[in-house]
Image 1: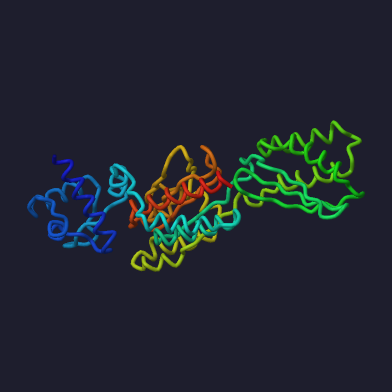
Image 2: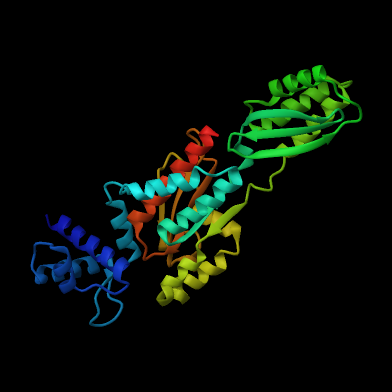
Length: 339
C-alpha cells in the first residue's frame, strides 16, 4: 500500500509540474488530487521519494520537481498508453489521408506530430536500402523515349527518362517490361540490382533499350540521398520553455542543425517495440541531458523502415506524447502498406 501511495504521489507531482511549470508542494497535491491521506503523510512520502532520488528540491522552502529517475519510473509504471480522443484520431486521418506521395506523407506527419504534442517533431524518410521493389513500369513517351517508374515498398517513387538509340515498338516494350519485372519485382534493393546486372551479363548482345533501362533502374536503386534525410517541425514550440533555455532549449536548437545527431536521438526504434522513451541522461549526448525523446518505428508490414518521434525538455507530457507518436506511426505504416 505504501509503495502504491508513493507512486500516486510521484504521478501527481509529475502531472502538476508538467502542467504548471512550478515546483509542487504537499498542500497543493492534497487539494488537487484527493489522495485520501493527510498533508503530513504526503510530506513523508515526498521525503521518501526525495531520499530515493525520484524528486528533488530546486530551492530551499520550495516544492519538489521530478528527476530523470522519477520521470523514468512514471513512464515505466504507465499500465497503458492513453488512447487518442476521437477528435485527435479524426485529425490524424483527415490530414494524412490527403497525402499524394511519400514526401507529402513525411511533411504532413511532422506537422501533425508537432501540433499534437507541442514539441519538436522529427520524421526520418524510409531507408532505401531496406526497401523491396513493389512495381516497375515502362511508359512509352515517344518511339525512342521511355519513362521508367520504380515504386518501392516504402512508398517511395523514382522516375527516370530514358532516351533510346533506336525506336521501340509495342511488342518489344511488352517483352522488355516482362523481363525487367521478373528480375526485380519483389526483390530487396540489393538483390534487384544484382538480378538486373545478371541480365546484362547473360545477354552480352542485349538490345540497347534493355541496357539503357537497366542502367536507369540501377542508378535509381543506388540513389541513397534519402537514407539520412529527415524532416523537422515545431521548433517554435520550444519558446514555451523559456525558463529552461540554457539547459535544454539552446542545446536542442543547435542539434536541430545536425541531422545525424537527430537520427541518433531517435535511436534504433523498431516496430517490435511499440514506443521508445529516452529520458535525460539516457540519451546519447551529454549536452542534451535535459531533453527527452519519444520515438517509434514505422513502415509497411512488420519491419520498421524508418523512425519518427518528438524531442523536447524532460518536463513534457509523456502519456500524451507517447499516444501521439504511436498513433501517427501506426497510421503512416498503414498508408505505406496500402499504397
